[in-house]
Image 1 (cartoon, rainbow, N blue to C red):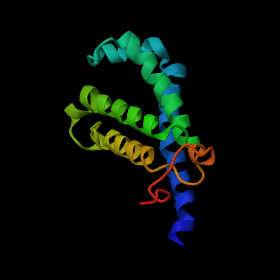
Image 2 (cartoon, rainbow, N blue to C red):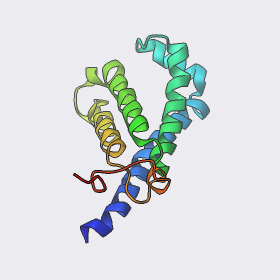
Image 3 (cartoon, rainbow, N blue to C red):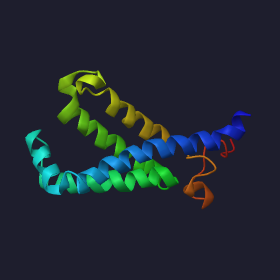
Length: 142
């Protein structure tokens, strides 16, 4: 039963986490705009804000899509986790742990989920798996 549920559970996790990143990246383009995102990045002391803002927006959109479809998962998961570590360092750490206070609880969860999904293999319903590019611990013979 667990083996049958694993692909569906991994797909649901990929969709949920990927959608969060996709929406936040899209907001940086459509709602805040890259200029507004750059201004915010400057205000919190992110180096090279003019480069970082569009790079983060693209990363969150592309990385979110990669998680959803299950493509390039180790790369996407690692880069998204690094993105969230930056968010912790520059924005959320000063507010403590609690998400209600603007703390790092939520972004830490996103970083951990990104890594877990990134190195899970994505399951049988991941594009990497369908195309035969990713082997999971389940398929590696010892």
